[in-house]
Image (cartoon, rainbow, N blue to C red):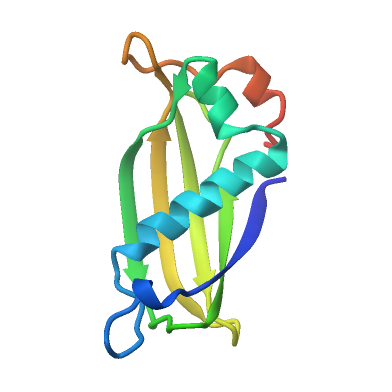
Length: 132
């Protein structure tokens, strides 16, 4: 699976008085989508951390095209750009109920040894589940 999609219903607390999603909430949406992408491959983020692997975000960019609104169902598509090494790179497309792109985003995460706090290569047991 090179990509995965999740749907999220925008909650009231994620919006301003005009019912528009506050820009800071998109980082959370991206995290939810990445976690579910991994889960769909059979990789639990919790189990990965229990095995001493962490994935801190080292870069994130978002390009806002349109607004998302309270009670709207948005779709977050997570796309693996290439086979991971020390880093794993994802692109995202967030669309509204009409199928219009509202946000284009990218995150880069680094595989890190939880104990040493040093970068590490993606473990083979994870690579074996990767689609590319």
